[in-house]
Image 1: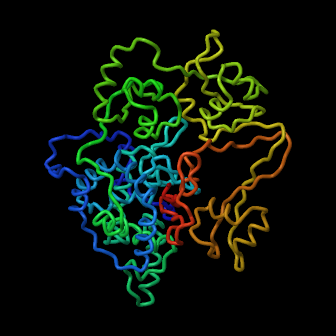
Image 2: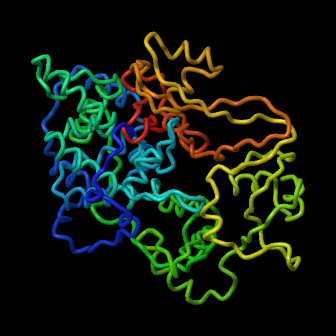
Image 3: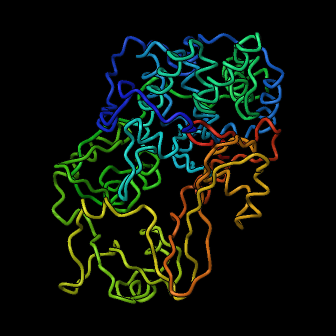
Length: 489
């Protein structure tokens, strides 16, 4: 989502979203249907939108049955929870399908504008809605917390604009963008409904794209597609866990794969799950919850194999990896560093517990939580980051500014969350450029963020971003949340 407004009503969401309890009552009166798809169809309540864009998206999905199947398979873990939350608020169930166009239901999807999670929140909007982001955890990827935050935001937007298509447009482009478009039409005496507004291409495609998904879910046979069956019952529940436990061990105690564990708990960014509180909550498949609780009660060995290590002055990453008997790749991934043996790290690192007394120390959870998510490292020769502020003047264009400051137009757009190349006189742009320098510090970017907003459209390693080979309509939408990542394949 885009953050072009900056002012959010706290009554629509706050830190309490972190403590959301996702357990369900199985005897829910709303679970009479055997299939979750029947329940979703019964809750469709948004007016259909008649748009020339819709058919393009229908054809796009219909021509990619493998992609659709993978997306629906991922949704099995999360869709029941979202449908329940949507129904609790009296919202149309079309809203529960929104993550399909936001992220393809990939909880690790990350866009180029750093929007993250199945609902694609950019960092600032996530914080506004109570989604904490620190060294240990990124709650934008927390399925239950992010769902609550997204629905809070959508309800706020619906209250502001009075129509779901306008609320969705604002979710994608930012409430300020939609409000200005409405005001322009009002002054010109033109209709102010969604289809008559002058909006960014991505946003004009956004609601039709959801309509295409709705049409496919309603009658998949019309598009030569088959829906993966999803039972109308909870896939996961919450369990209470110790305040420090390795993710790998938690998965083993539950009797599930680490991949399954991470899919349900994607907000944890380190191999050790840790909190300052007395305990923490984890999501597990409903059938695995009792396994975890029973096995944990009888487990009498250390719950974590990770400690903290403070590198010595000038100590290189390769030497640290050798010292602790860990590969440079695992050490780098654990600490969000590139696997460069010559990196000189100046911040505490997570390392395997050492048999050598005094070499490591217990993890200081609070102190490490304050570390920047991107860890500064020192190179013998690298570049330094220079911050630039520019107030747009008459005649300025992105191309001219890029040439003037030695940075690309794309970088200026990404760093300022711009949704188009149009600039307004008086607009202030903030961006950074790298200047070569000897003995300087550089900021290492987060190791991959699942396709880190690579995913959103370039999902880096873990997410695959929507192919931009698809129609322009499928060109990455930058959401208000984010600048959306394309649905990852």
